[in-house]
Length: 226
Image (cartoon, rainbow, N blue to C red):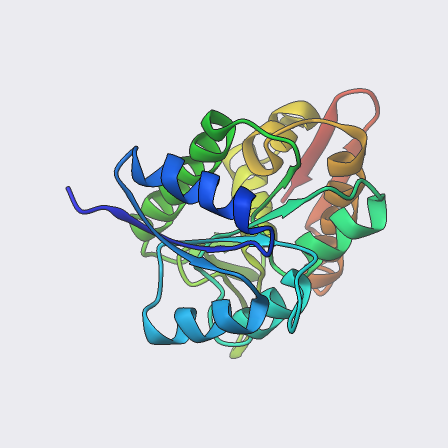
């Protein structure tokens, strides 16, 4: 089995080296970059399986780097490392297309589980190559597209994951905690706020078909009615 290729962008050299050595001892291949600009150059030279990005970096911060990558690449998983805890930073990161968010300090076991979880989700998406009918819309999980007639609109990785889970439980209640743990990795307050933002985004993208609704079920979760 080939090694998992990781680009790690971390400006704290001692921490970056520890993470690199720990991952490589577990059969990962890691390119350590000390700033966001160097990480972008490494990404363009050789596309990795996953990017692990510190938020606060010189030359180009993690948010700017993620935004640059997502202009052309909606699929490669991006995991943010940060010591920040403000809700707006979490929401901003996911809004830019991040797949996960880990606060420092963290265990290497947690990081490895998060990386492998994101790669497992990609393998599932790649196995689903067909359009799924959703009312007047069609949804393509692998290509992360929502189509209405001849018009196509792209979905972010997180929007696509969220819609896919809701569809798996269409016309039934999808547990809020299950969604948070499956997509965000935990059900804490900040992730819950971020999920609510993405639910609102999906409602707007599906508003052309009034027969489709994403309902809040107070105390339980959400129900996709179609």
